Image (tube, rainbow, N blue to C red; front, side, top):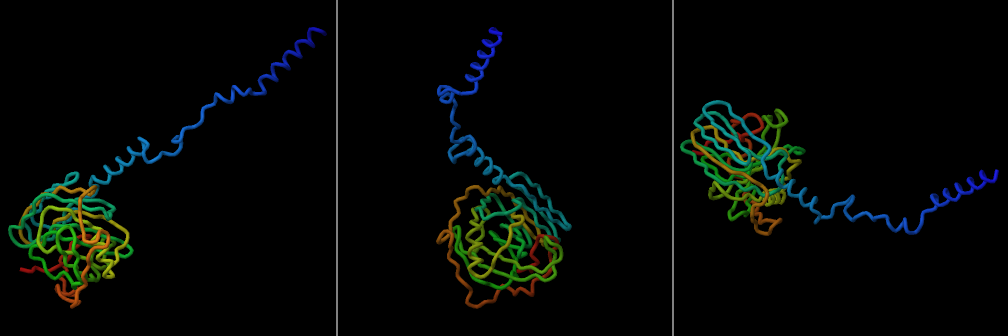
Amino acid sequence: MVAFSTLAFGLSSIALVVAIPTATTENTLEKRGDFNFFFGPDHPLAIARRNETLARRSNTNYNQKYTTGGTVNFSPQTNGFSVNWNTQNDFVVGVGWNPGSTAPITHTGTFSVSSGLGSLGVYGWTTNPLIEYYVMETNVGISGLGSVKGSVTSDGGTYTIYTNTRVNQPSIQGTSTFTQFISVRNGARSSGTVTLQNHFQAWANLGMKLGTMNFQVIAVESWSGSGSAQQSVSNTGGSGTGTGGGNPTTTPSSGGGGGGGGGSCSALWGQCGGIGWTDGR
């Protein structure tokens, strides 16, 4: 009996020691670092994620290829494309992003119309409201763009702003009635940066409001003649400029007309591309 009592007392002492942690034990616990669950902006992983996002955005992820006949040789690549054509049929081809954004787009390369007509520039759509929009860097022989609303100064040039309404025409939502917003650069160029935010703001200043971005590309289009183009495209960093930065100089039209009128445009284009303008030559 004595031996059993001694054993029981010894076990109780051991249990007491295990149950009560000492101050020394608590002090050896490590505190969690500042970035165990939240990455600060300068954390290496946060920087890596930002760089990955920029890389994904800079690479084009959408090809626009609409052809209806004739010869159109379109070769899209990541961040660029080439095309040559000889046709009397509609086409709109290019590369870009889906969805689009307000980021400046830089395009570099060549654009040549040997005969007939054609254009080079930014082309895209929005929904709610349904808008087809253009920032044309080069316009060869295309007229009937709609009513002149005003102008905007951006990226070293002045653009005339047009708008018109297309009734029961093909769109990205099927046959619909929608509005076109168009900026046309006065003085063509085949390379440069397009500060889209300047155009979007200028349109808004004139009561022309865009909706939710759908696709957005640098595009070449024509429906008559021949020509060729080669373009490299990116939207991560151009040094685009506009008077007033985010509030560009917008000059409303004093006459409220011109450009051929929205109701007189020929319905030349199908699908979610193409404007349906007339030959200005």
